[in-house]
Every structure is written in C-alpha cells, then in structure tokens.
Image (tube, rainbow, N blue to C red; front, side):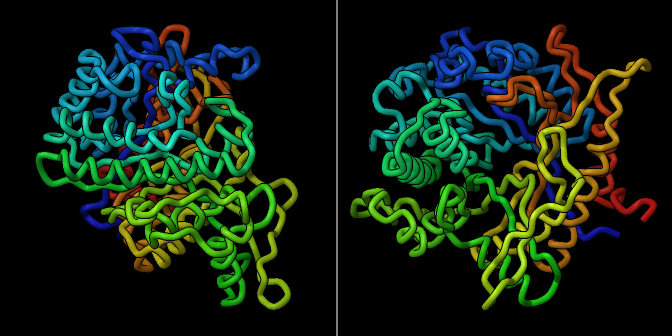
Length: 457
C-alpha cells in the first residue's frame, strides 16, 4: 500500500554550475562563481567548477543514465551567463542550444524537464554593475527569463524562478562564504534580498507572458523545519510559532516567513520589520504586489531542522541534539521528521501545492573492489525521509513530487568536491559514472510508486 498518489512525480535534481563545466567554452560569460573560484582560499583545496562533471559534453550519457534510473522528472538549472554572456543584450546561440538539446533529450527519454532559472551563477558582468544591490537587477532577471521561456517554453511546462534565496543572499552577501563573497551590512543585505524577491515576481510575469502554452510556475526556497519534541498540542503549537517567527540575532535572515510571506501574502512579517528595524529594505509602490504574483506551486529544499518544545507561556525553546546524534558526512543532523513537519506547517500556512525540490545527504562513497559503489546510509536516509513525507501526504498535505539531491556527485560550492550527494558516483579524474546502490534502489521505489519503502516493515 502507498499513500503517494498515482500522479506523484519522482525525480532528481542538479544545478548548472555544479555539473556542467565548460566554464569558458562556446561563448559563455563569466559568473560570480567563476570569479570566486579564482580567489585563493575561497574554495576547499582550490577546487573550481571549470570542468565539474563535464555535463556540458556528456549530456547524452547523463540523460541515458536518467532513463536507466527510471526518473520521471529532472530538475535542472540554466546558467544565466551561458545564455546571456553579459547578463543582458546579445543571446549566445551555443549556450541556449545546449539547453535546447538537453530538453529534447529529456523528453525523448520520457523524463519531464523542471527548469530553474537561477541557481546562483549570476553574471559577473552584471555584478560589476551592482549585482543584486542594483534595483535594475529585477528587470535584468525578467528579461533573461523571457529569453529562456521563448526558446524552451514550447516543451518545458514547469518553471522555478530562484533557488534558495536565503542562501545566495545570506551566504553570498553577508557571510561571504559563497559568491560573490561579499560581507555587507544588514541594510545592504536586505536590499539585495528585496531586489531578488522583486526579480522573482517580475520573472513570474515574464514566464507567463512568454510561454506559448500552459505552464506552471513556482520557486524553491530552502527551509529548516522546526519539529515538535513531542506530539502534544503545546509542543506542536510552539514548533509552528517558531517556524514562522523572525528571531533576534544571526538566525533572523534564515527565517521562513521573512522570505515566503512577501511571496504569498504580499507583505513582510511584522515581527521581521521590528527585528530588522531601520535595516529593513526600502519598498516602492507596487513592489509587494509584484512580488506576490500568484504561483502554481512552491518547492522546498529540506535537509535538516531543529527540535523545539513549549517553554514558559508556550514560548518555543530549542532542544539541543542528543549526544552522539546521527549525522551525515556534512555534519548535518539526520532528522526524517523534517519531511513531515516542514511540508505540513508550510501547507497549513500558505495553502499551495508543494514539491520537495531537494533532499538528500552527503556520504563517504567510493568504488569498492567489486567495482560497485555501496551506500547503504543513503538508502536508509532516503527511505526514512520518504516514509515521513508519505505520512504528511496521508494527513492531507498536497505534495506533488520529490526530487532527490542530487542526480550525481558534483561541485559542492565552497566545499568543492569534498562532499558526495549523488545517486551516481563521478570519478572526477576520468569522468566515469557509476550507479550507486542507492540509484538502483531508488529506481525500484519509483517503479513501485513508493511501495518498496514498506518492504520488511
């Protein structure tokens, strides 16, 4: 028995800069990640995305592996500077042609394309014009969206605007760990965020206007679910309150409501405006209406969370992880309940159909003496999380699909090639691909529409 509906979409995900390589080929412009990778000490062991998984040249091979996996959908991102080398202006036919071929290959393989317009590779030429700090960035992005949808919209139905706005704003402009590597003050960081939200809204408009046929539009923020320590009504209420509060201190920028309330309610949350006070971004007339363009779905990238319980007067109190808690090789806590409470709380608040657009784990994988890659931890992790997601669906949460992160091992941003998230092992020296045990297991999960998850239980 399964609670996954017959229409449930089973897929995997990847991102342009993390897998494509060909960073300086066929007229592609520079991205801010190309530039950060040149900075000494910025990336673990000096790694770069120059070659990555060489997906740009091995696209046909990779799509054949997707077919072998039985994927129903593939979430990929488009490199803005590959399509528009200067970020605006002249289109690069070779760059756009790559995605044209990718989409055709996916459809021929029976894999539905789910396209993300921005997964962090912002054009360097536009960064030199102020980047997201420049209010014009919203129009630059909308123009780019139009170009892509006019070219691919006859075959791509499902679109996402921005991936993990909290990360590229916070880690890229406040902490400086990610591209562009800036460490700005909070007023500037929140201005960057507001312009990115405005870009999202204008891109939604552009996608709908440019699409030659029916389309569905969403976006993919990351969330860190707050999980009730017990099932008591008090702990559940405390977790829900914490999930949608903007806290004081460093965690404020990671608040779910600060980013999602503008998109779904057309306003910043009041507690966020109090917390950020004079640092809150300037909002011009019509901004919030544009940001709140209606969406067809919302994607969520979910990996880990925190447990809370009700303290005095019901106020949420964070519960530390237990000594010796389970964690991935990235040191992220293994918390399957995040795929129950995260979707549940989000659906209760925002009421739109959901996709899990990323979920997975970094694991210590290598090719064994028998030539295979055995990753039982990934199988167990994914099984636990999917069983939790199935419970959410059984309890009435409208989840339409799940995209495992990631399709293949890849460039993990500031961590370089240190972490392996893939269902497919990549030997970066030879570019050999090897299906991990988790890949064949996931193939059977897909074929059974989740029934396999219950084997032996």
